[in-house]
Amino acid sequence: MSRPASLPAMASPAPLWWSSRVTIGVASLIGLIGYLWPFLLPVAGVGGTGTATQAAPFLLAAVTGLCLLAILGELSAGDVRPARVVALLGVLVAVNATLRLLPTFLGASPVFLLIILVGAVFGGAIGFQLGALSLLISSLLIGGVGPWLPYQMLGAGWVGLTAGLLPRLEGHPRRRLALLAGFGAGWGLLYGALLNLSFWPFTAPGVEYATGLSWVPGLSFGETVATYARFYLITSLPHDATRAVANAVLIVALGGPIVRLLERYRSRFSWQPVEFDDAVPAPAERRPLDGVEAGRA
Image (cartoon, rainbow, N blue to C red; front, side, top):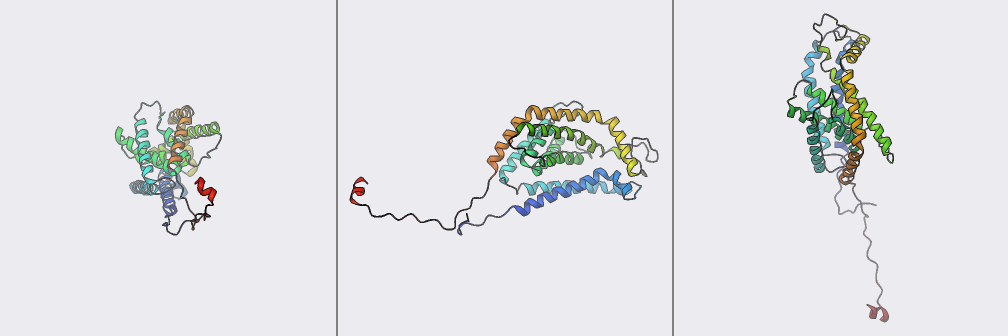
């Protein structure tokens, strides 16, 4: 069916849709470089820390700015009305930031529950925004602002972003819930492994002495990986394992009703343009009423 000539053409959101995702991709790439620079230095043949240390503030500023651009772009694109996206995202960020205020135990936190489920239902772009904004707002509430905050925002954003890549498994709610639980457990470990990289290169007591657990200039790529693996297993694995178990348990216990609720809101917020025929059919001509029909009329 085609649209009548009298109706204005609807602008396509495709260019803004792509720009939002490109912005998220660029922010993720820069953030990944910021995380992995100790591993990249030996590959690039660089043995010192001067260049990376001087570039760190610029990397953080670039990542923060690109995250804001991605948020602004996504709020005006996609298959959901922008005003409703603003309202929904604001409510979800407020709820998730409040959840971070709850007492935690050895890394177990409910903050990842909504990030994973929202990313799986509404897509990776909204999941990325929810993760990044939740960590930003909650850090302001608890006074947890510091050089680690951009790394936390990126890590939580990537949780929601990758959740949007999971298959929906329509008609198989239990299989979908099991997939989400396994995904949450995996990110419970991966999130801690990534966050460690924000401070691990600076934990050595002296850059000229190798401790076997800290990064020092001059390590090869293989030595860097082995050193970090020892550091992670000794210092972080038990803490991250608790987070992984908590993520899986929360998703299994609460994921089903929350996913159904989010799916219901998504179906209400989504819209598709309706097109009409160019020509509206004229009403059928009526023949003159005969005497019997006229009497009945």
